[in-house]
Image (cartoon, rainbow, N blue to C red):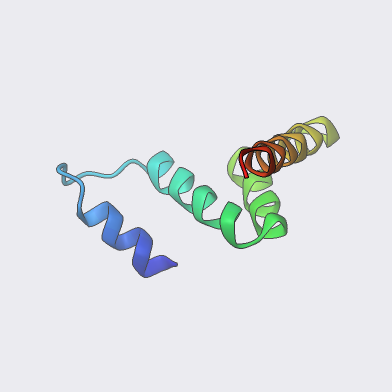
Length: 72
């Protein structure tokens, strides 16, 4: 996963990379690999302040799953 992220960052036109860009790329990769890893990383990266942040993120994952299922 790290090599994939590094490669995609190297292919960008600019030399500087914002840490927020890296964080979002990591979240995208984790979402497809493991929901638990995604939630754990998101809770720190996005600085969840309570249960409502976890619930909102879980609802977002479930909505994405429902959209993908409906498209099939």
